[in-house]
Amino acid sequence: MSADVVGYSRLMGTDEAGTLSRLNILRRELIDPAIAAHWGRIVKLMGDGALVEFASAVDAVTCAIEIQRQLRERDASGSEANPIQFRIGINVGDIIIEGEDILGDGVNIAARVEGIAEPGGISISEDAWRQVQGKVAANFVDAGEQSLKNIGRPVRVYRLGLAPKAASASEPPRPTLALSDKPSIAVLAFNNMSGDPEQEYFSDGISEDIITDLSKLSELHVIARNSTFTYKGKPVDVKQVGRDLGVRYVLEGSVRKAGNRVRVTGQLIDAESGAHIWADRFDRDLTDIFAVQDELAREIIAALKIKLSEAEKAVIVGSSTSNEGAHDFFLRGREALYRPKRDREMFTEATACFRRAIELDPNYAAPYAGLGFAYVLDYQHHWSDTSENSLPQAERLISESISKDDKDPFAHYVAAMIGMWKKDYEWWAREADLALSLNPNYALAINVRGLVHIYTGEPAKAIPLHRARDSPRPSPTIV
Image (tube, rainbow, N blue to C red; front, side, top):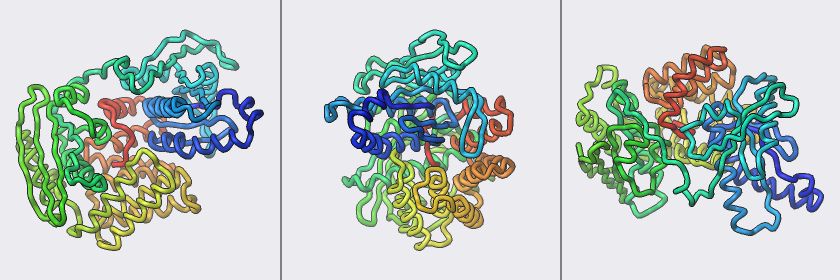
């Protein structure tokens, strides 16, 4: 993805200090968080422009749309007489890696495609368009073949018509996805009924843990968290959710936490007929929350008539801690990592929560993995003052986590990410395979396994993996 400021020289000539200040604010508050949330890597900044690398064309286009929409919303407020606008261009192609830089025709075409984008608009090459067609809710307009400067062949370009977000009626309907040949389920975000918005992390954490437990079953197709959490806080038509995500069953629920008591409700619905398959309510002490999650997962499995193998019975177990406080801090840290805005503040909060969880239960494996992943992100985005040391720190923490619990797919996924940044392809592939052996539905592990094939010169092998990851589309996520 290539982006630059429209009329940068004019803006600098009019108000150099003010323009630089506004650009820094936009980067800090809008652009950098959007790139981080969509798993982009800022390769370099060039005055008024930026070059960003993504592992997925869908991530790149979704990120570009989010940036331009947020900029338009700012412009609509009328707070600036001369608002800053960007052009964005996106291409999919081969690149040459030199240290931290990337070069080659793939990069050059992105820059040239960006140059013909409209102010405030996005242009993408035909190669990028093929990757995102039907996966991104945007209106693509064929701008025909374009002769681009210093590019030897014409390139067909598509422009994205970006209507204001509120005008969703003009957007094309989401495609209906075919049902999996296995039983399929989407777990929606459980409603927080505690009357305290600060408890949102707790209800989201229970939803996430149920998704993780169900994902471990090879005979069940489970949709990733960030696809299902897009419905959070909205009126839900279960039949439409089933069509949108290509699933037969939808699980809804709620969590009410009061003092040392918690109530969890769940209902399993047939998305084709709207009929209720199963429903139950659990009123327990907070110390029993792990048992509640196990019982809920097992009742769903029984309702779907899925037979567990002995290995699957062993991995469908609760948390590796009995310390309620440690688990609570782990949930807080994990939710911090999930936030769309990833920055130094988020990193500081997440690491503090994970460290507190470890203090409360030094044998609890999950917060070591969470802390390790926070350091992987710090190595990528340079939030701390010592980010060059963050990868070895992450490696030490993940080794500690796996030594305490080698059945956690998240820990092996983070280990695979460490292998990726170390360019240790055998380690990368081995840890991704281990994560998938423990959780066959793990979208991020599927993605990172596909990336191994891309980086080792076997991109054809990555295609079915990335198709599985992108349809239904899980947004970038952590676990």
